Image (tube, rainbow, N blue to C red):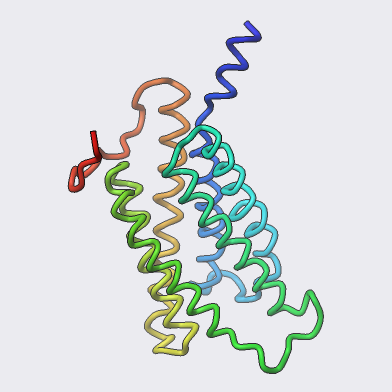
Length: 205
């Protein structure tokens, strides 16, 4: 019995944990962008570090051991993104001392564009995993582009709400995906559908 239980632990799929981490932090962060909560990021930081970063990085580390390429790269990349976001909020709120007068938050905007470019490639692969993942990644591209323009001061009244609503949609779809992966894996059959791969790009045999 102990050997069976150990095998289950070794082969456990961490994707639900990583996706839940992403969903939780985007849900909380979108509440700020949409004006439902304060724009002060002080109480967002613990969630960004624990769920946005640590949960995804933990899941990515397990996926690397399982040789699960998609999960390892995607969860790892976005886990590191939320580490950087949390540190940016720490600096902006003066947790590491006085914020330098010459600090330029638009650099964060260029970082968002960099992640947007990479996310475009991930989106192609995500649609070949399942449709829910594909839509989530497409929304992440929209979110990152909107954040980038907003941080650069380009029509923030327009791009701000787009960033907020796209982030909120990411969280809702992410909660569904995390729940579906958890239930489908636990019961060993499809309980909630994620949508079949689009089949646009064929993998090598």
